[in-house]
Image (cartoon, rainbow, N blue to C red; front, side, top):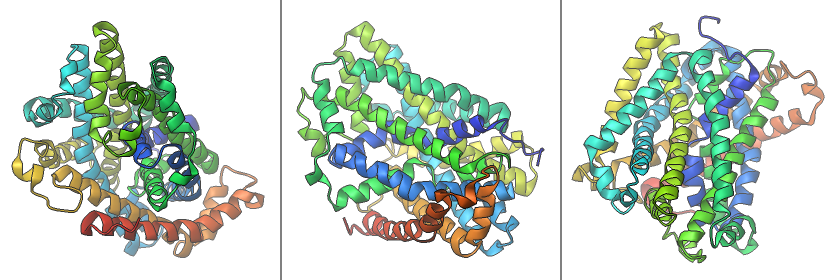
Length: 463
């Protein structure tokens, strides 16, 4: 076990796992989803689902990882259920798929940081030209993959944990600083009101479905990352409280990211939030197109400082996620094939970067990879991979909790969760875990999987 390494303490695990969950989805996608979902109504539903649905999946993944001290594939084999290792394989593939295009978007974020430092606010107006410049964006993506590989190559306590202990507090401080500044902008309160004051009439089926998906995806579930991180966790540590802190950190950062984003958007729109609700302001445009123009209005010096600060923040958030995504296949190579970590990192990182080239050139450079995928809701290759990853994660998450409840058996899950938590068997937490893992999570995830599959690949919207 010692040869694999362990987190030096519980704080290291919490920060690393929270870093895995916190990423572009919290700072970029969450505000956009909030806008489409009706503002505060979406936020309320998101918070409910994060704890009702995602929390049980998280503790199950961590428990399986710590019990076996193996990667996602080896974990199911170690438990004696070789036929169920497909769950780990699916998570492994999903992580590789996600990192292949996530690294491209992370390259955009890092590239925008470089552009903002140079005072190039026009990059937002020329977003299409920027993403189609594959030589420039390719270099940014290579640099980002290099940093990701560097920290993973240093191992658990020497690389991943040290990175998380620096980046996570820094990330929080940077977001809070930008929140404080955004509140000073004209029309900031219109954005805050839209974000924080629920309109019950906005809670529709689509709001519920969107909040459920965002809560699940934002916590890095179903891809084996938390099984992998759990395998480096000491038996003395309390999984329940650790998972609580991780969930709170993830939803908390997503929440304050909204507090940061909507005053900026309201300032840009002159206080009129209707374009956000209509979906006219969102997606890539919310950050990569809209915000450089906002920063420019602040003046060249202040705008350059705030803009650089923001995109550095976005790069940091992306790095905490790319590190965890790379660690999953690397741990698999190290555990199953006994390949030295440094060599495994080099092989896996190189393969994933090459696999991500279609996503790199599919944003304007290559006509085929930009518009050749005629799937409902997506024409470019990156969008196609995103939709594919969606259903893989949902299916994997559903399989994990179903496995824990009915194959591995809840008694074994409870036994593992009780280690490091003396009063577990007499607590309400055990009843909550028992009910949600047995019924709530598998049923809701199965329904969501079917809905997303129909919507993403057949154009049939159930919401």
